[in-house]
Image (cartoon, rainbow, N blue to C red; front, side, top):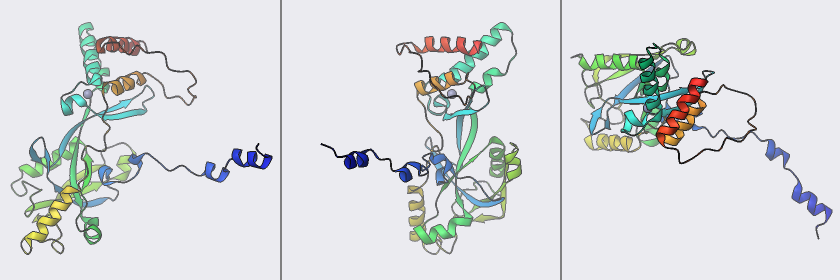
Length: 289
Ligand SMILES: [Zn+2]
C-alpha cells in the first residue's frame, strides 16, 4: 500500500525542469557550414570546385520550391525532385496544369508561377577570415556552403569568361572573391549580395603559411584531402520531399495562416486515390479557395 508521502512523491511535478527553456531543435537556425551566410559587409572567400554530375563545377545549380500559403507565409522549402533528380514533382505538375488550363480558357495569369521552382546556386567556399583559426584548431580550412541568387551567379560567370581570371577555383592560380553583403538591402528584401574578384589575381587556395604546394606538396595534398573529406553537403540546407509530402504542402497552400488552435481532426483521406485523382481534387479545391 502506498503511503501518502509515496503518492505525493510519485505524482509531483518538477517545476524547475518542466519550465526550463526547451533547446532549439531546428538546426536551420544554428550556424553550421551547411547553412553559412555572410554576416559581415565584406567576406574574402575562395571558391573551391566540387564534383556534380560527374564534372568539376564552381557552383551547383539548384531548383528550389518556396511554398507560401494564402497569407504569403512560407510554409515549406524543398528541392524540386523533377529538376534535380528527374523524379515526379506534383508541385511543378500542378503549376503547369494551371498554366495549360488558363491558356485553354484564354486567361492571362501569372498565378501558376508560384508553383514552380526558383533557381539558386550553392558554392563551397573557404572563408579567409576564419581560415587561419581553422588551420590551427583542426589542421585544414572548413568548407562552407554559400548560397546565392542568379544575379551573383552572373557576376561569377563574368569572371570565368574574363581571360584575367578564368578558373577562379584553380588550386594554385585561382582568384579570391570579395562577397559584399548589404544588411539594409537584405532587411528590405532587395538584392543584398554582390561579388567581385579580389585585387590580387592568381593566388593559391591556402594561406601559404600553412600549406604551400611548392614547398611541401605532401602537406598541401593532405590538407586538401582532409578538407574535401569533411566538406558540407551543398544540398544539405534544403529539404527533400516525396510526392506525399509535396501533396500535403499543395493542400496547405490554400490555407490562411491562423493563430487558432487546430481542434478538428483532419478529414479521412482515401489513400488509394491515384495521383491524377488527387491532382484533380486539389485543383478544384484551390480554384474554389
Ligand atoms: Zn518541382
